[in-house]
Amino acid sequence: MKKLFFATLLLCSLLFSSSFLEPVMAKSSFCAKKCETRCANAGIQDRCLKYCGICCEQCKCVPSGTYGNKHECPCYRDKRNSKGKPKCP
Image 1 (cartoon, rainbow, N blue to C red):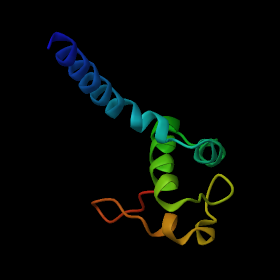
Image 2: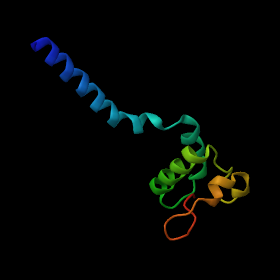
Image 3: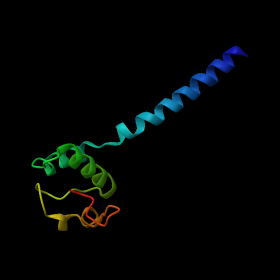
Image 4: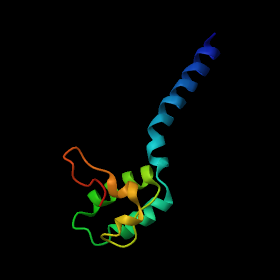
């Protein structure tokens, strides 16, 4: 009986802890490299990288260069924040 309880407890703790690791592992190297290039000249780099990463994961693309060229990725271009302004840098 104790072995079954211990095994169940161990399984539950592994499942619970894996739920915290998922967002960290979800970042792709594609998005990281593209966003690093896109945000190279940004004034607030951490914010730029955060929103670029979110947009890249959802749209699967990032426009070339450090500014503009949003016509290359319509999904990235059309994302808006709650105030109606462009979400993606």
